[in-house]
Image (cartoon, rainbow, N blue to C red; front, side, top):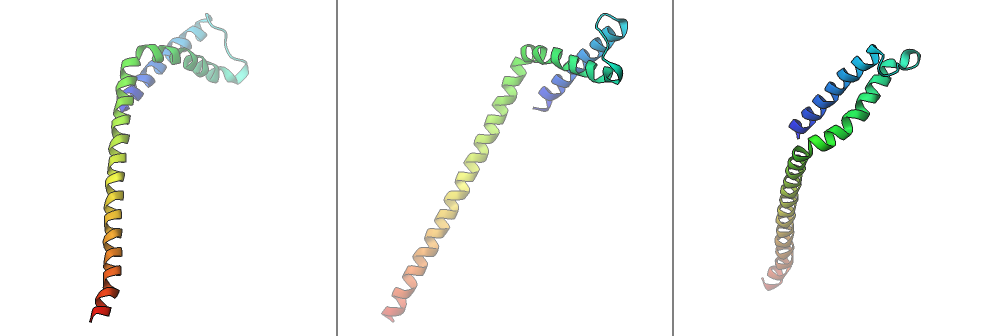
Amino acid sequence: MLRYTLMRLGIFAGCLVVVWGLVYSGVVPRGLGDSNGMWIALLALVISAPISFVVLRGERDRASASVVRRVDRMKANLDANRSQEDGADEALRSRAQSAPAQEQAS
């Protein structure tokens, strides 16, 4: 997951540098007033999103498979803990039910 995030940030940084160069060379219009930095970042984000979607498809699939495995492992651990708690509850109930019966027999 970290690898995918770093690759995505790398693509964004590359697009940011390219857009910055295009804006300051005059190929792409500048933002209005003080919004030039935000304009460059927004334009880089819009350009990098589809590039990341296409280029990082395999890495995204590997990251999602890793997340699914982790979630399945956590669900299995929760189910195991739940069954242990149920077993302990049943043992306590059976002890509580057998204690009055033993007192009556004495």
